[in-house]
Image (tube, rainbow, N blue to C red; front, side):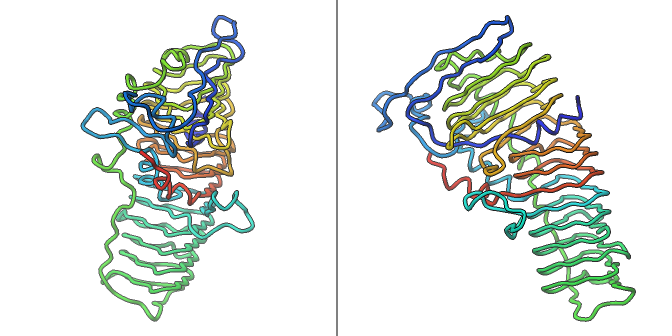
Length: 421
């Protein structure tokens, strides 16, 4: 079902150091011919200085390292890079949209820090910023724990009520006449302001020549100055992560041979399948399942690259099998799942990072919970049910007719600190 596409899109895992003894890739249950299948691999030995003559791109060298996975160059002149640096670059907001966000229901974005413990609904941390490069169109009650930055000339349609826990930067108008708005920091608005009530903890600045009406009158203490708002989401051609290039580079530079993993192993499976992936960088040409569940069990610092689409008509489950397990999943195409999807750990969403190179539209009809940090700058998401996200979303456009809740994990903004390249 296309309705499950975004479920798959929005749920992944993270990354970590390798254990001294790695679980090898094992296919549990039925393979396509009904037989149980296992593949080779084994103990990498004691961790220590890399022996002379060992290829630094080898699995042996890779698994003696720690921190987020290190990716090889993308084939266009880029050098090796730690995936933690990519994550820190693109997941600075709870929600980033290259185009517009429209919601006719309630929206809430708050934050926690998984380094301090799991999300506590009774004590969320400050933060959970939202950045929209075009228009923000709201109808219901919206509460944003951090800054709200809207760079489009059409500005913000505020809905019934809007609370901003940080600063408001709005390139266009702010309204409507029935809206109640609270901004705890400064508010800078480039267009007309028309609201029922407005409370600003800092300074309200409106561009010269723009009208300001709050409850029908202009408020006192208003500052006038030019308001320029730069787009915060990196959506330009030179700013986008080259997901396709990264995947293409790993079509040959991978550790498949070390665990006897065939790149086409999951290209057409028809029986329930479990894959245990140890520490390493692995490549699959595509993931295509018919009438079968797929479980990916991650036990080390893993990067998985998929050259085509991920298409399943039943459940997709990705598990972090060990406390130090993390996964970066790069998909050149799109992800579609027709069954239930459960990926990652709500207490540690910073360890979950999914990068989608393909575009198109994704629809979710029912209520869903997503875990992970999802980068899909070419995807338009249509959500007719409610969603709760533990992590971050970076998409092209979102249209919702159900409640949206995002719990941003501050730890992902520090992902590069663990990089040891």
